Length: 499
Image (tube, rainbow, N blue to C red; front, side, top):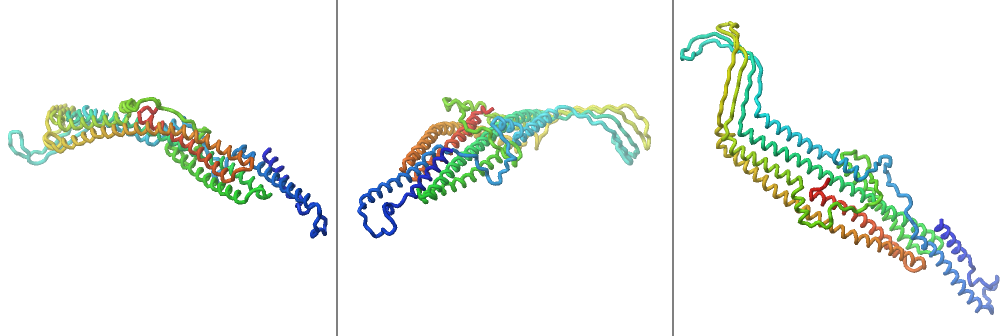
């Protein structure tokens, strides 16, 4: 209200200045245009005083336009064209982290892989247990046959048996080492699930801060656009009464239009970030996620004074990827030992038939009575799949070496991530202090620039540059905070302590 009232008063003064008679008209009557009057000296003095008065009124009017500019604030945020505000869901970081652990598809896939590994382990153990085969068998013979003494003669007979077969056939060496390998694969799957859970948590946290950054940048552009629009309107009114330069109004208009484009881009970035976060959380991407917090606040998850070497050692102890690689290497070693030493252990077999046997010559179906058969055996396998199968042995050795080298590769990757995460977190922490000081400097520059305008000194271009610097400083500040928080989560994940 104060701004509008003062500006209206300034315009009234300007109009009064325009209404002040021209110095050439003071002291003259109609018909005296060509006559020289003796009071020319007095008219000259009055002429000078009126020109000074008009300049002062115009200067006061323009100063009134500018003097209250620092008090301007952004009005209601602009809405993006086509934005469906009825389909917006507010979300915060704790909710994001909970949803990441509950609904992320990669975690669910890792859980199913763990279930598969458990089933494979159980299947390997079951190879040591016997199996039962109940059933009925019928046999008939017609024509020549040989007896145990070697005589060949004609015989017509039939037999039938009913009962159950209890059998156990175990390649002990192969089953033993397969069971050991399956146990290690189960451990690897468990560590893989933990690794995927931490990866999903990291992706969700970073996606949340990308969304928070997009929203903060949107707020910055909205405020800059609102201030620029107000400034443009006041200059337009000032140009209308002849106390401001039209070119200055066009400069501000150009800035306003640029902010409008930047606003559309900010809405786009926020919507894309929301869709990506919804994908990570396995939510409907048509629902627009918006961060609940109004401001970004820097956080610290890893001690800033922790030595780099200590962080590396912590990572090598804690990272589930290393534990998974070690379990896979152990499983590959057990498979190799199974190929090398397993065939040396004999295969054991046992079978028992308990039931009844009947039949006789020709079509006789009688003579049914109890019948039992027992068989126990032990054997070795030579050739493919057994002793001297060098191809199988060499293949398992190569797989073991590959798994062992993979441990070193994962180890190098873990160390790199710790160094990279620590370096980035330290750098962004230092940048925070710089961009915070830059923001304070840009704010002070804009304030001083507008104070100069209050006294009619300076150009509109200086004010535009000061506004642009302040907008850029605000954008850099919120972006640096978001990136710093993302770096802290990355470092926390790198050292293996992400909850």
